[in-house]
Image 1 (cartoon, rainbow, N blue to C red):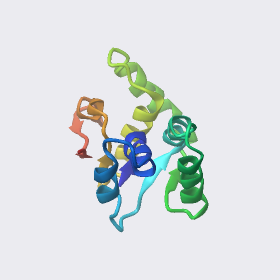
Image 2: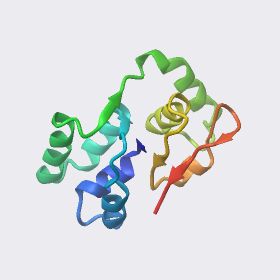
Image 3: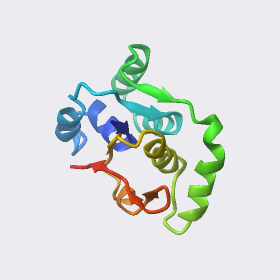
Image 4: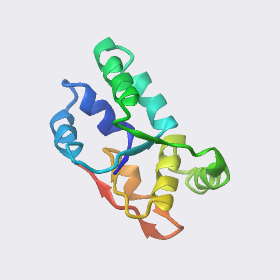
Length: 131
């Protein structure tokens, strides 16, 4: 599973309208991969709640999330951002599209409908899990 910001925030925030869905969706025993830009967005969105922020720090320290290193993928990532500049595509979304290319069997867990517009490898639909 490739994890976007929305489900991660919803998982850690019981008041989020997608909390119940995120708990069920992330209860899988699959490998969960995300990226630094998703984590940055999540920490920012959770900053008002010390408990939720601590929960995310705990997930990282317990290695409940695998954080993909994408520094060697900046060329393809920025190319995707240019291609979808009219949407516009965030860095986190671009990283998730690139992760879906690097892990083609992965499904992106998201609440972001833009992931339905983006294509991996130019034309392939990205498999998504949404509420």
